[in-house]
Image (cartoon, rainbow, N blue to C red; front, side):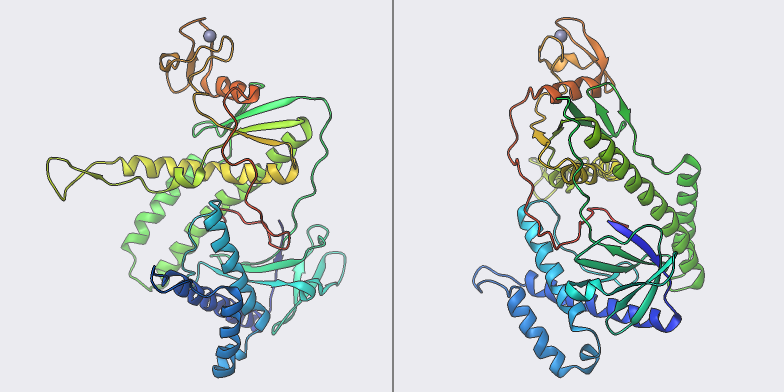
Length: 398
Ligand SMILES: [Zn+2]
């Protein structure tokens, strides 16, 4: 993904926001239709039928007609892709788009290539119904089939070109690396390296907590509440930027250094979903504690570490060189003698083999097992097919 900051004029900003509103409205309508599915009513309308309905709606409603048809159709296409991803198991269920949170729309096809370079530092894109919007050239504009205009929660606008990174050629040394992804250490390599995804500092986290408390005291809809929310959004955006930067650098580095990269095939979707409610056998209708709170803490860890993002990028940069390995028993098996026992784990951090006495960092030991491909190969080898026209999606974009 190649992103540039855009600087719209006040009139352009209003026009851009209007387009975001249209895209959001169409997406939510499509979601509503999709969620009305019942067993006895047959399939809900797909993209073709929805696009036809859109044409009809544009004929009736002037405010919809005033917007760009391309933007509105793309919202339907995006929704279709989201549903496909959901059924393929690579993404979670499509959600409602909210004002102030999901402000963005996509331009695709020939209209996405109307880019003009103004000077060494400035360029402009011709956005339908908005006009030429200037953006700051912080690097070369990639050759992309589509772009997305977004407004973040702080009110900054960006243009993001959908460019799948060029695959990096393998070094040809025959070297294989195993990666174990953990919560305390983001990634442990079989070489013994421990990689940590940068998070918010202790001070920044305290500031966030302080802001959260302040937010609770603000009246709904007040200016003060908006200011506090903007300050919080700034911290969240900072964390997301650091994570993205780490993912890009780490994936490039790994793709350059190793011929084959083996990762554990963790089903992130099921790991981050809510734990099942546990009915109490002695009291009908009552529930036992299911450690939901503990799991949500773990979920936060998983998401801040950006596991999904890292593997996704690795698959693009080291195309065909990423292997997914079933992680069963990789944390209990000794990487030296192969002895597998639950007692091998001395603690969360230390691995100590009860058979041969091998002692190592627990995550590194698991990474060596993954590199050896010791476990059986995984269920899903190939990622869900995604159209090359589709811009790369981040599971947790801010
Ligand atoms: Zn051993």
